[in-house]
Length: 119
Image 1 (tube, rainbow, N blue to C red):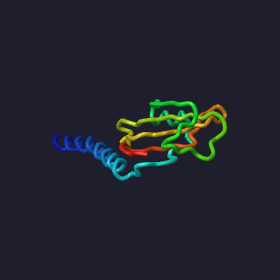
Image 2 (image 1 turned 135 degrees about the vertical axis):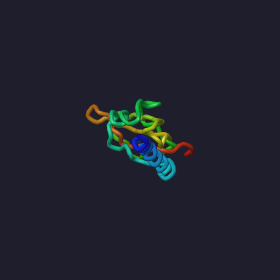
Image 3 (image 1 turned 135 degrees about the horizontal axis):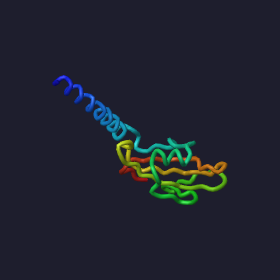
Image 4 (image 1 turned 60 degrees about the vertical axis):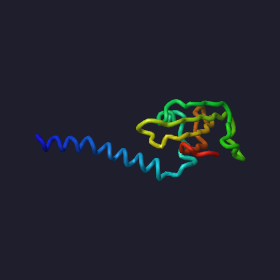
């Protein structure tokens, strides 16, 4: 009976330890600002990963006064997400810019920055 309890405790502890290692790596060793990680994903794919955006603006809204020299033609939207929860140990803020292509909104630019980063 004791051996079964040890195995059960190990089976329960292993995922927790693995998650803590992953979360620690993501929080402390990843770059504090990352560009373009979501480029090419559809709005549906982004929402599936991060849920509904905290902000959804029509048009291109600049982050820290940066505006690309060339923007995609047509309609553009700017979404802002604040990922939270067990699947998002990175937390921080995601800015996602979408352009409409054949009726589908597709990311053409994205920026993620960790909490505490100032532009």
